[in-house]
Image (cartoon, rainbow, N blue to C red; front, side, top):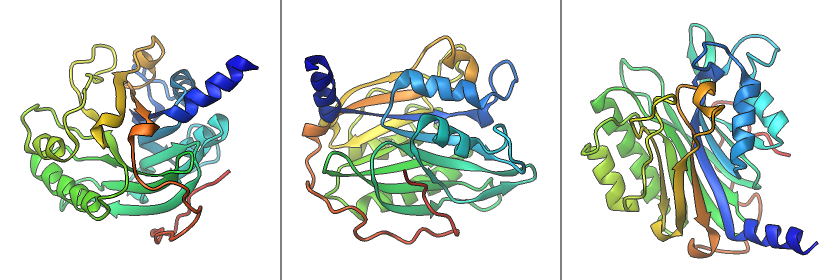
Length: 269
């Protein structure tokens, strides 16, 4: 009983948040296995997870309805991003969370003549404290990323007093890139472990920033043998000390929900 109480107390002090580009649940062996992705997520035991490249294809099986499947088997609430449509069906970003969802906003980051992109912006009730999470997947071209990052910074600046985490696949290959300089000016420069490609990680494309930065306890890539095969990216996980977040406590659930947009609703449990 004492150990159980101690574990519960630890969970209330430290929360974990991660970002994972699941590559449509297609692994390095070219097999599409959502169950394998779910097992990698279980290994991390995270409270909040930003997903990129989650497919929502026509059909009613596990392989096509990936977000619904992951939400169900992991028992986490799912917040889908804006509906992005390509020839093979719908795909995009999502957030999975164990915490109550207070508010949701979706930002269209699409750049002319480029693949559609978006960011998900949520308020979560983290043990009685409002925490903002913005999950994004930026584009492949430098001008595109600059445009998209400016939109993200504008969103961040709109609520300066709320503890905020920005995370996702930033697709930024160059350490000296302007987008990273601007991010570090706002959030500080946390660790950025290489996580791509998964079998021999050399590039830190996946990033996690937290404001205030002193709330970060650790950031690391999840390098299990299964994670090295399940996707072309490794997931990146951060541990955050809730006591260092500051912000407003004793929030009221459901207060001031933003417009959901795109005809979608977050799934709650």
